[in-house]
Amino acid sequence: MTKKELEAKVEEIRKYKTMIEEASNIENALEAEVISYMNENNLTEEITDTAKITYKSQVRSTLDKKRLEEDLGSLEEYIKTTTYSVLRIK
Image (cartoon, rainbow, N blue to C red):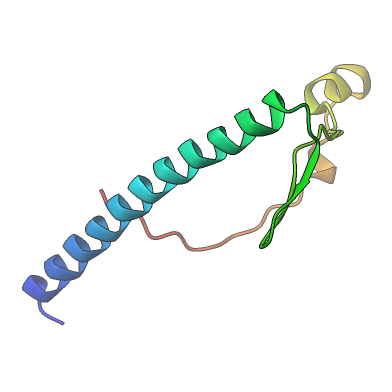
């Protein structure tokens, strides 16, 4: 691949990233409308001809690493490190 071909690939990647961002913005706006419908009608579940829609609270528990280190000291021996490759284009 030549540098000119590489540049063309990068431009194509940028074009698709822009399209993804625009599609994501549209998706978020549509989701906001669905959430508004669910809230206005005080629903946690709705069934249409093509979809089952749920909008409910859920709980997520996480470990407070900072507090644990304050209480127990260093957690260094428990840290697992993974190496992987990342492509970045600016």
